[in-house]
Image 1 (cartoon, helix red, strand yellow):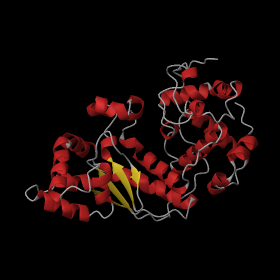
Image 2 (cartoon, helix red, strand yellow):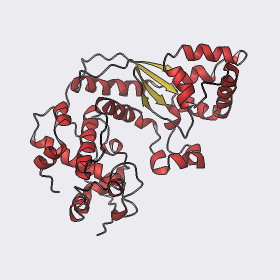
Image 3 (cartoon, one colour):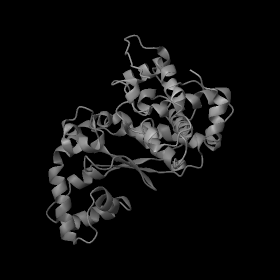
Image 4 (cartoon, one colour):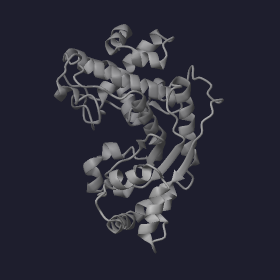
Length: 337
């Protein structure tokens, strides 16, 4: 059975943005958050005594500094200080154009700090036990490496992954091998707060998907997307699920066909990892749904299941939702588009 998406110029109104109904007033929740720009301190560093100045810089960023060298730049801790300094200096020289681009795109970072602060107000409202992170640290790292990270004490933002989808270096073979276009097209500033909140959710509820049947994984992903929509109520839905606006339109228009794909092929209870990976996680398309369809279609269906469940159970908190068995959510939702 094969379905093809047809993109219509007239978009249904119900998919255009996140549902803002019943959004709580969080304006009185105090959030402390300060931003430090590691990339500026690194790339502007005096090179006259580079090794010594590098040591001082790393020491001025407790925890992150050492992790930047060892994990992000993948330097060898057995290297001498001079060898490490030479390695970092080579990185600075090679990535100066990336740094220069970031300074233009992020001339004023305050907008993104405000977006993260506002999202954290919702985090504290829904999850008061969440461990506060009072710092944002921005950095420039390898284009084919790490991006946005949640550490034990900070939101760490890899600016090299937010320079705009048309940024020329994203088209390079180096980047495309790790982050093909359907992923690198999301390398824009708009996804900073989205990525931060995804990391918050994963910190609150580490994923445990091993050996779960597809339908349970769909519901689990749906729970996370539902929470993400509550933490970022002003963000359009397509950004939350990493689709384009046109892809989300088409998926909603063909929601019944999407669901039939799972039901008619008896996929819901499968534990076959080769089947599951076709519908959960990053993918450029869903083969059965045509060339223009998005991937991760199982997460979309799971999101709709959770929405239906929460419509029927509006008294349930987000913490209670996460504690509810996935099969219970599925059975109670009675989802049938």
